[in-house]
Image (tube, rainbow, N blue to C red; front, side, top):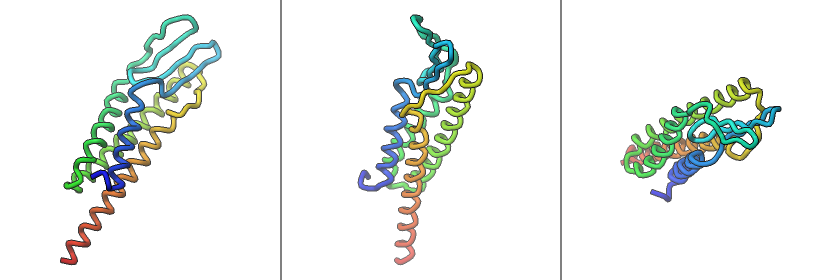
Length: 155
């Protein structure tokens, strides 16, 4: 049901995770003018006048972001089964924490290995926003479950 606030948070989580499927989400530059960036497919290296070459593949990161997107979107339609929806929202939160951890791992790996400086961007804060909206959705589902249980006690 779209009227429930947690459904909106789950939809927001799904939409924000889709933003990682296109474009660069982390950029780095080093002193020699080389640009390193991370996208859905991996870590890329670009020098002036040359074609980009892939340095590392980020398959685990890609799988996790796809799972976050699919699970958060499918949890919207589990509104009649709140306990299952609560478990799916918990899984989304755990996957998001793993996603943030992997991004931080690759972030420090690129900055250390290639002596590159990060370039601030909007997509750097999106994983934390995904985590916050996932937690808010979980809290909303839990609040609904408590409300339904309190009504059942009154009967």
